[in-house]
Amino acid sequence: DAGVIQSPRHEVTEMGQEVTLRCKPISGHDYLFWYRQTMMRGLELLIYFNNNVPIDDSGMPEDRFSAKMPNASFSTLKIQPSEPRDSAVYFCASSFKGASSQNIQYFGAGTRLSVL
Amino acid sequence: AQRVTQPEKLLSVFKGAPVELKCNYSYSGSPELFWYVQYSRQRLQLLLRHISRESIKGFTADLNKGETSFHLKKPFAQEEDSAMYYCALAHGSSNTGKLIFGQGTTLQVKP
Image (cartoon, rainbow over all chains, first blue to last red; front, top):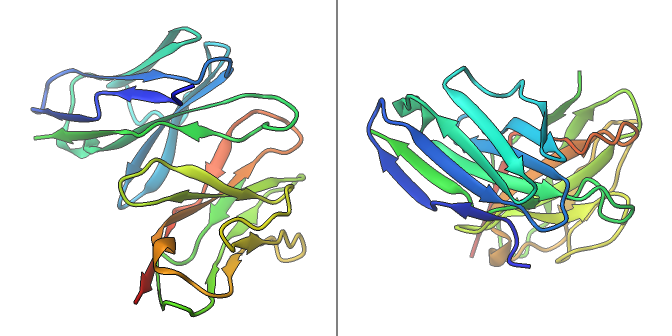
């Protein structure tokens, strides 16, 4: 397996534009997590899914952020409209609730977002 | 409330010196603790977990429930250890799959 795949790797956009980040989890994993990483706040959990269902979205900063997981192999994080303070690295991670690997999360390479 | 605290944002040591990255947690149940590492321009990856009780790349971490700590240690730092280190806590009994991360500590190993 190629691991968790995120696209794009880099995104530069202008304030007010819609941004869509994509994630393909590891096949067979039943949890998917979206994180945001900044220098000031470190790694913040935004939302996570279990079996494609959103479980906890309390970390989503505001209504401009939304996430979907239409099937087990794909998720999106959308920001509309984007603002300069959304500039960060966004990570997707997946995990499998099995006996030996429970709670181990596997991270994608991240999307570096710059909102001008 | 569940919380993970890494008091140092930056830890700078010389090559060959001992390293200890501090991690304290707040959790009422039986936690599962992890250390994740992020090398420059690489993805975050698991370094070690307390239930495995293993040494990875010379690093060890012992869960001290009395002090609610899970400090990461290495007796002799190497330049390739320079990275960002995150301590994380999982809800051991409720099995939600969710991890709570600390703020991270950047380890800088100077030649």
